[in-house]
Length: 340
Image (tube, rainbow, N blue to C red):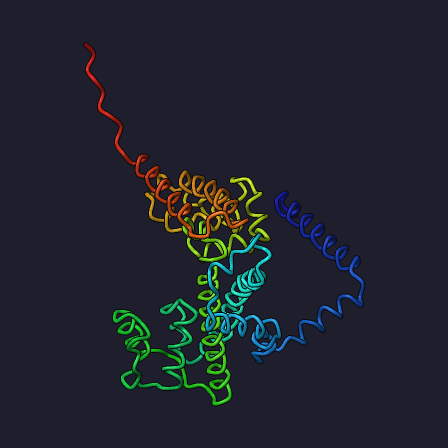
């Protein structure tokens, strides 16, 4: 005779089986077959099937425009005529900012592809070299070489990491890759390095132009952060109309910490939280400093929206004021005066 606990578990299993059957019955058979066909159609053995940004017209057009823009400098007095959004290069800067984010995501996809291919040769490498670009460079340098003494990693990694990679590579259980698999891994490495180079060119162009498009905002947050804030807000004028509490959370990502402690989680941390002013502040004051910098970002965006101060002196003065305020927070309280 079954015990009460066993009967209860059997009832639970029957209920779960019934729910699964009901869910399957609600999905049309044609849709189920379509999903299976889509999964089978994905060819993860082919790099072009998972990473195709580099071949898009948008990528080629924006990168070419950024490289051309670096060659020909625009005079600051020409760049600041009327509203900033009337500037013909403004839209290009916003496009560059969006493309830089897409390139970062594409590099992550290519990095995963390289790891899947090269794991058979050197499975420990992905835990030793975490950065995607460094990983691609090391894979290109090692290739199918089993004798790590014949591999020169100087200039690719820190000396301590080179020693660990060399020792681990000499004792790894990995086997040489087939020629076809190795060629696919090396091709993916070349694509990751090309994407990284394009991203550097784009960010260099954005930083160069932001000093003229939004000199005061760039003085407070830095050119890269200013471009990110403009891009996600939909323009400099839209950014100037935002309240400071919304500017503070621009770029914030929702993190899932199922089962983990949230004691070290920083809430309401967007792009502003990672500016030089905030990161150089002691941890106890960073949330407060983030709110202060966000408020000043809104003010500087209003100044830059209509070119009120093309020299950027207002932004530099505001940055000095913020740094003085943060320094005041860190001063010890005055000693208590003895009672008379």
